[in-house]
Length: 259
Image (cartoon, rainbow, N blue to C red):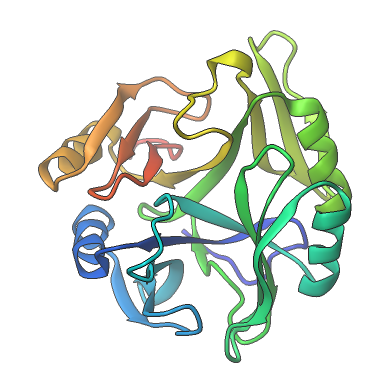
């Protein structure tokens, strides 16, 4: 268990999910990850922060009834200037969907999409620094961009967020990049070409740490979610891709050694 006290610019610093039935989804993740909740900023409607051991790990909010948007986990990347980041997103071929705007005293945010269409956020911290705990079950442990090809989208994140984009091991099959900040890997990019799922298109995938992937996947099914890819070996450890009751897709992974 590590307390995350500061997030370098460009590093993922928060993850948030907007849903239709907030109470139902709160119960799902409470049962799956042991989350408890406290009220968060209400600038975009009802919103809570999920807590583990009293520390903030993720956000859940309610979509307006008239907004029929895809339900998906959205990673936020740290920035020192949300307004400058928004301008950079636009100038590099991305689009802005929300903001820049203040989230009360917590900070300032932007929600946009890269040139491939994958949605992400940028967060300029004030009172709320972002995810405050990592390395323990129930916390986000990794983020991967699933897209068509890595070359152009990698350059986008390099320019906008200052990422170092490096090809993965040449022995690894497929089109993959690792995004790093100050030499530390913070995310990855996986180009699927024509194999990219049509219904979802380019998107960010959030990985959550669990103690036992098999047990967690079984719990997802029992709680009204769906197992999309059953437990099996992954790059960092056993993993499974699942969806919550509203269809938000995420990956369960066990990276810590057993015992």
